[in-house]
Amino acid sequence: MDENLIYNKPITAFNMLVFAVPTTIRMVFISLYTTVDGIVVSNCVGSMGLSAINIVYPVLNVNMALAFMFATGSNALTGKMLGEGKRSEASRFMTLTVLLNVALVMLIMAVFFIWDESIYLLLGSDEELLPYCVEYGTIMVALGPVWTLQILFQGYLVTADKPGMGLWLSVCSGVINVILDVTLVGCLDMGLAGAALASGAGMAVGGIAPLFVFFSRKSLIHFEKPAKPGIDVFRALGNGTSEMVSSLSSAVTTAMFNIQMMSIAGEKGVAAISALFYMQFLFVTVFIGFTSGIAPVVSYNYGAGNRENIRRIFAIAIRVIIAASVVMFLLAEVLDKPMTMIFASSDTALASLMISGFKILAISILLCGLNIFASGYFTALNNGRISAIISFLRTFAFQVGVLILLPAVLGIDGIWWTLPCAELLSAAVAVPLLVKYRKQYGY
Image (cartoon, rainbow, N blue to C red; front, side):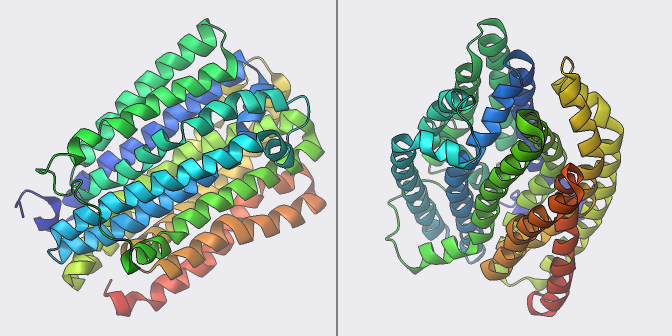
């Protein structure tokens, strides 16, 4: 194997950051241009458009859940295979997972197209919002295979030791998305259909361009004759369960947030929580990107049986996560009002809701990095069960429990406190699990 590959370099803070930073920047950039979608829609279509996007979001999350499960689970197994010297097996397995994922997404698309209006009403829409949901959702669901490939290839490019290419593709995707957002929605007044088409054009870059890499046999992993479906598929799916659980849980909890907000604050409340999720995600992606960035190196060294390297990676990662958590929280507290006014410069009612909410919701940023890292680290170590437990509790069980209890006592403030409380409870589980399995994995 090429000596210039990250897998053959010493495990130092510098090398880990050099490898992980492109993935981190890529994730931040993706969240940034996704946030621009929300800003353009909020200012050009209005709070109705922003509310509709948040109601459609759980539908899209089902496809995303499958893609994340295949991407993270198969990447962990592929990295392990590379560490074991099984390069051809890794490529064949990667080919199989891509084919399976796209086939499943197309099946799910058909279900959504048949029952789209009923699904949106169930997720919190009313008759007034429904046309907006259908306008945006129809196009986004149809683009399912494209953004499924984008999610898959983001992970495979890192495993193939091409994180820089993933970064530049994300930059190009974002630039195209932003330009088309402004053009189609702002200038041509195409509404939510324009926003969906802009997103689709951006996703096409990340979903189609990497095909040229993976069709080349010079790539570390590349398309070959797919492996036969077998036990490895179930291992990968089981290992990626935590990411699927996280994404599906997000779909359910987003729907619950929408329903709670609609009952307490109406359509403005749904628009406010939608905008705040955009803002929070912008900070959280730093932790997702860093964890995803180092995961292939963890999986490779786990496959190679190098416990010393696993220990070094863990020690470096913990220091980075703690420092980033403090920095991201402070930035969120400083930038809350400027970011709010970008979304709601001409809507004082929406701005007021967002400012009061983000002061509380931003507290979750202090703890979410540790929880995201713990779940991702166990996935990289091919321990999908522990990863899924952390993810399920963090993104579903604790959020649902708090979201049911607190609003009944605190009203709308109870909704804002949901994420901070859920992250605190999750940390109380994640830390003991990291301690418990330390000797087993050698970190």
